[in-house]
Image (spheres, one colour):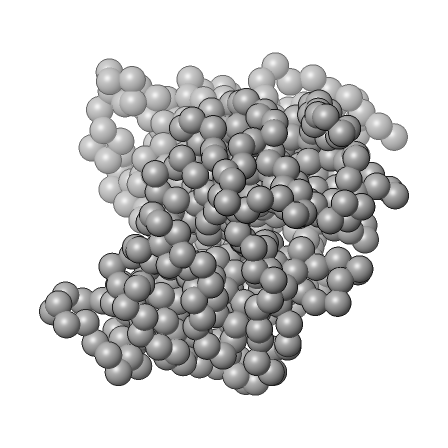
Length: 609
C-alpha cells in the first residue's frame, strides 16, 4: 500500500511511532509553521489529523521524537534563533493537548539543525545522575551547542503562542521572551558549545557512545562541505565539554544538503552525505572518535636555538626563515641567525633535531628549495650565493650577482643517463634576469655526492616578469632543453637551450603565453609527452591563483614553438592552489592546495576530492 498526501507548507521532519496496540503505527509530521500533523498508517482513509494549528513564526528546522506511544516531543528551530521545546499528548478519547517546556535562547543566528537524543541508561555512571535527554543544535553563528533537556517543566503557555512571541520580538514589536514567559520555560541553558566550521552549519546528528567515559558523539554538517566530529564528556559535576576530533571534506564547492548515519555496531558507524556537487560520499568511522590523523610535531625557535652552539650576537631572538623537505620525514630548516638544522624522526617516530652548521651567508635572509627524491636541497642568501646540501655537507654551487628571490629545482634524470641530472632556476630580486644551472650528481645518500659538468645560463626575462614556477623538458633527441617559466602576472614564458650554445650570451624567451591564468600567479607546471615523442609534441599543464588548471598543446618545429589552449577548468578549491602532479601509472591529474584551514588534494580525472 502506498499513500500520497499534500501539505501546504514545508515538511521539516517525520517520525514513525513505536508499535502501538493492535500492531498499528502512526506518523507525526512537523511543518515550517510549527503545525503538528498525525497520519494513521493503518488506515489510509483517515487522512492527516491536525494536532496543532499553524503559528506565525517560521521554522528552519525541527525534530519530532516519540517518547512513548502517546507522547511526542518536538524541538522547533526558529528563523530568529530560538528553539521551542514542546510536546503533544495524544488522547484515546478526546482532543490532543500540547504543552510548552522551554524556549532555549543562546544562538546568534537562525537555527538550521536540531536533534533530540535519549542518553542510554548505562551512560548515567559513577553513581551520579547525568543528563538523561539531550538536544543538539546548530546555527549560522557557526556553533554547535548541546542542551540538557532532561527536565521538562509544564507551563501554561501555549507552544504556538510562544512561537508567535519569538517572531514578534525579533521584528521589534514584541517583548523579550525571558520577560513574558514563565521562569521555568525560559531558563534552559546549553551545557556545551564549540566552533569547528568555516561557515553556516546545516545539521547535527548524535551517535551513542560505546563507553561510559563519553556521554555521546556528535557529527555536524556544514556549508563548507565538511562534516565535523565531536565528543561530549562530563569533565566535572555539572560541567561538560564538546571536544573536536577533526573533520572530513569529501565534496567540492559549497554545501552538504543531506546526511544520514548508520550504526553497524557500537564501535562502527557509516556517515553518508549528499552535496551540492551532485555526489554522495560514504565514510566508515570507528567509535570512539580519535584524532587518528593528527601526528603533529612542533618545534619552537627556543627548542631549535638551544641546539645551536653559535647564538645570535645581535641580542635579538632568532627566528625561522625557510624550510624544505629532504624526504617524507626529513625537513631542512634555516634561521635568521644563519643556523641550518635537520628535523627528522627515529624508528619510534619520535622527533630528532640535528644542528648542521651556521652559515654567515644566510644571516638575515635565506630561501630554500629541495628535490626530496634525491635528498638534496639548495640554499641561497642575501649576496646571491647558492649552496647545495647533499645530506652530508654544505657546498658552494653558483654565484649570482644579485639577491636571490626564489629557487626552483627539478630532477631531470632519464633512463638514458648513468647519473642523476639536476636543473636549478635561480630567480633574482630585480626580476630582469634569472640563472639556470644544469649538472650531474653522482654518488648515493650513504656516500659522498659530487657534482659534475656544471653549466649555467643567464635568461633575460620579459618585462615585469616575476618567476613563480618552473619546468624543464628534456629534448632527448637533441640533447637540448626547453624551460617553461610561470610568472606572478599569469603569463608563461618558454626558453630553448641548445647543447653547445655559448653560455656567456643571454638567452631570451622563444615564446610568451600572455595571461594564461589571467593576472594571477602561475603556481605550478607539469609536462605530459605524447606517446613516442618528448621533443616535438605534448601538453603543458598549469595551475594558478585564479582557481583553474589549464592544458596547452605544445607543438614544435625547427623554427617555432606553438601553444594552443585545449582546456581550462575552474577547480572547487578556491584560489589557494599550490601544485599539481600527473601520475605516470594511472594518468590521473592531482591538484592540491588549501581551502580555509584544510589541505586538499583534487583528482582532475574523477573530479573528486
